[in-house]
Image (cartoon, one colour):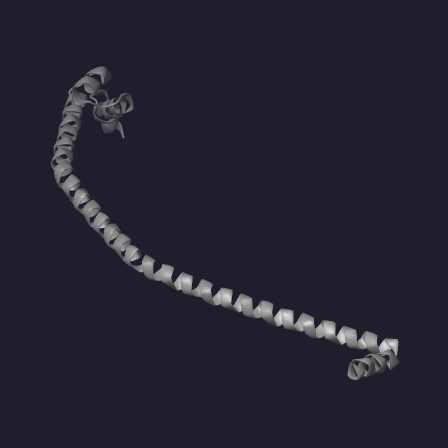
Length: 149
């Protein structure tokens, strides 16, 4: 008991402002320890999050490779379809071009023979402005004008 009484008496002999400074220092030490513990906890959380992200990346890599393979296969399939479509439409385009050329040739012959714009449109399959142009360029009434020019 003597020791406790001596300790209490020695504390009572310390001035109040010194005790206040000691209390503040103790509070600062406790706050620093709490800050260190909080930082350690955040560091642990960051390490765990990084490990989780790495695991997810490992899981996504095969899926990404699979998606890239699928995209490449779709590109190849689209290219094959385009080639097939071109092969199928090429004869149709040539036939259409031949019919159009034949229609224009017939329209020119009619215009040279003096046919009307309506006849040129019907036989040649041309539009009204085209038929008018053909008749004005190749028409028989234009022959006299050509000689004058």
